[in-house]
Length: 107
Image (cartoon, rainbow, N blue to C red; front, side, top):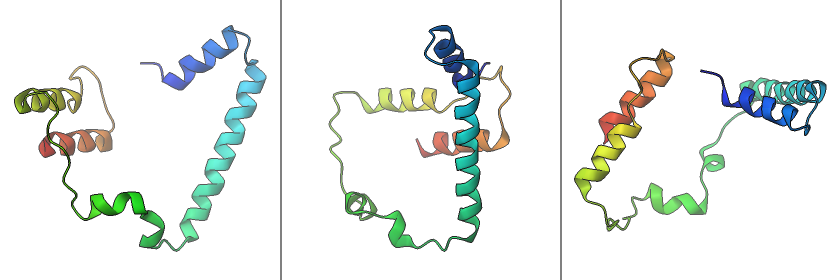
């Protein structure tokens, strides 16, 4: 399976939006920026206040959501299980498998 980023890059080059050189330059800049942020994260002192905002307060406090969707609960569970199930004929990173297993268990 080809990564979506590679497919999109090829499309942009084919359409003349990017040159291969410009695509490489953009990828290099992104990698450098991500690496810089990663290195900075190692020494950053995270505080819970930085991770919360007013919009999330109601969720944190257990806000009740409208459960009327017009779709039967059994159908929602069925769709949720399909979305949270990885194909058997592919090989996935163990962490990805764990994330999907956790999602399935929560349904």
